[in-house]
Image (cartoon, rainbow, N blue to C red; front, side, top):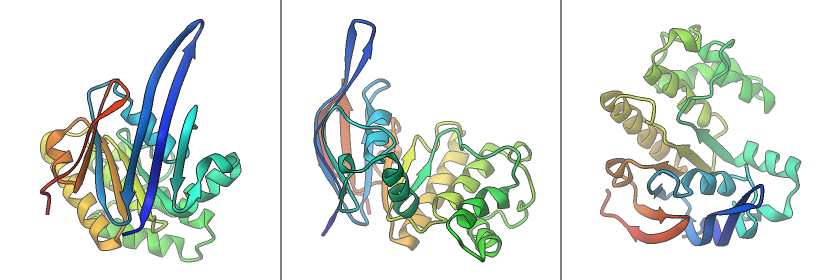
Amino acid sequence: MAKILNVNNLGKIYTSGSKKLTVLQDITFDVEEGETFSIVGPSGSGKTTLLGICAGLDQPDSGTVTLCGTELGSLNEDERAILRNRNIGFVFQDFQLLPTLTALENVAIPLELRGDKNAMKNGMELLDKVGLQNRFHHYPSQLSGGEQQRVALARAFSNNPSILFADEPTGNLDAETGEKVIQLLFQLNADAGTTLVIVTHDLELAAKTKHILRLKGGRIIANQETTAL
């Protein structure tokens, strides 16, 4: 199977005054097209930093990331933004919905920016898929946490992404709501045939993916297939 993400010998160092903190060191792994893949580790292990670099939101100090056939280090900021816009979906722990826009507008605006003439209609269909057909005109403040994350899921799939990055997608949700959101995420992902990369500290969630990469202290301590269906 083709590799959609290749990370080779990645390193990241943060400098604060005279101190240097190595956040990631010697990180090498591949993700195959259509795979479900989780990155796990304790707080401070470098998970979110790694996700940001893989998605082209941040740059490494050493090593390379090849995403959707393009080596990210060869692109400037605008070119990375275009690649993200075309190929990547994001789901964040804190939802990142625009508070002054309705649920429908939050989903439709990215579609409009891509030139979709049926943005509102397609936005409605996406919200319908996540069970929010009665919440089109509600603002984020009028929605529960679980509903807000459903809007975020609809938005994440709006550009039919090749790969979706989810950073602690259930981090702000109670256990029952979080389980429902994860079921929905995996169902949408399977329907769309998208590659899914999840950063999580939740080992039960990680066990639902086909592959687990374990980090500790900025290094890989395990890289293994799972028995997930």
